[in-house]
Length: 482
Image (cartoon, rainbow, N blue to C red; front, side):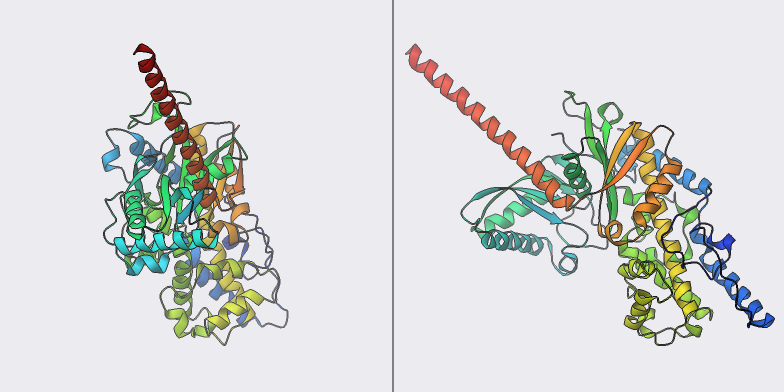
C-alpha cells in the first residue's frame, strides 16, 4: 500500500477527494447534497483543489522515505566513524556501559526558566528544587545518590561527567555550553550546604526511556523521545564505534545517543522542506540547526499548522477569509490543539470548536472544521512517518530479529493516532524478518535515571568494600609479619 494510513477518525477527510486523501486514510467523500446547484458544486471543487495545492507538499512518497533512510544511515555512520565524527552533524555520542533520586531536565520542564537565567542561577534553582523535594519527603538527613536526566546534546566523558555541546528545543542559557553539567550541579549543591546529594550518573532522556523499559523487557534496544523535541538512542556493537576507547569486555556493545534532531542540518532534508518549515526554522533561535527535530516535534508542530491556516485564510479558503488576531500570533496555535482536533470522532467537532473559541474565531462552518482537521492530520502524519523512517533505519542497522522500542514524550502520549501511524509505517520500511513493538515508557526519564544511579551507587559501594577488605588484609599481614 503506497503511503496508506489507518486513522480512527472516519470524518476527517470527508470534504476532499480520494486522490488528495490517499496519504491520510481510506475515507469516503460524501456526496454533495442534491439541492446544491452546479455552480456551487463547481465552486466547491475549485476551492478543494486550491486547498490541496497548498497542503500537498506535506504528502511524501515511499521513495522519499527510503531516500530519507539512506541519508540518515549515512549520517549515523559518519557520526560513529573516528575520522568522520568531528564534522558529522548527527553526533552519535557514546554513553558508558554499565532511596534513589532522579532529576529530569528536559523539554517540558524548566522551559520558562531557561530563557531568563544564566548557568549559575539555573543550577541554583535546580538545587533548590532538590531541597524542596527532599524536605517534603523527609529525606534531608539522608545522603542520597542522584541520577540526572539531561535532555540536551552532551559529550559523555564518564558516567558522572557530561559536557553540554549545545542547547536545543528553543532553549538558551548562558554559561553552560562547554561545561560539565554534573560539576555545575555539585557546585550549586555545595553553595547551599543543606543537602547531601551525590550525582552518580547523568544520562540522556532517550537512555532513560530505554533503561526503564529494559528493566521489564530485556529485548528493549531502542529509546525514542517524541515530545517537545525528538531524539533516539540504541544499542550498537563496539566494532562499529570508531571512537570507542573503553574496555572490550563482554558485552561488547554500548548505548549510542544519536542526537538525530540535527539530521538535515547539512541540507540532507532540503528536498522535503516546505515553505512553512523554512519559516519556522528562520524564526527559531537556532536557524539551520535541528532541522529533523523541527519537522517532527511538539515544539514546532503547532506553529507549522498555524502558518498553513493563515495562508488558507489569506486566500479566502478558510473562515470566509477572516481569521483572528490570535491566529496571527506566532506560537499561538499550540501543538496540543493538533491532538485535540484530531480526537474529534463525529460531526459535532466539540474539540475543534473549543479551539476556535480559544483562538477567538467566532464565525466558522462545519467545512472549516473539516479543513482544519485535514491540515492537522497531514502535518502530524508526516511527523509520525519521519520518526518512523528513523526507527526503521535503526532497526535495519541493528539487524536484531526482535526489538522493543521504548517511547516517551508528550507528543507520542497525547496524540490520538501517533502510535498507530508509526506501527504501520515502520512495518512498511523495516527489512523482512525483523519484529518490533513500541512500548510506552512511563516516566522513563526519571525511572531510567534512578535505575542507573542505583547501579552506579551499588558498584561504587562494592568497590569501596573491596578496597577496605584489601586494606584490612594488608594491615593484618603487616601485623603478622611484625
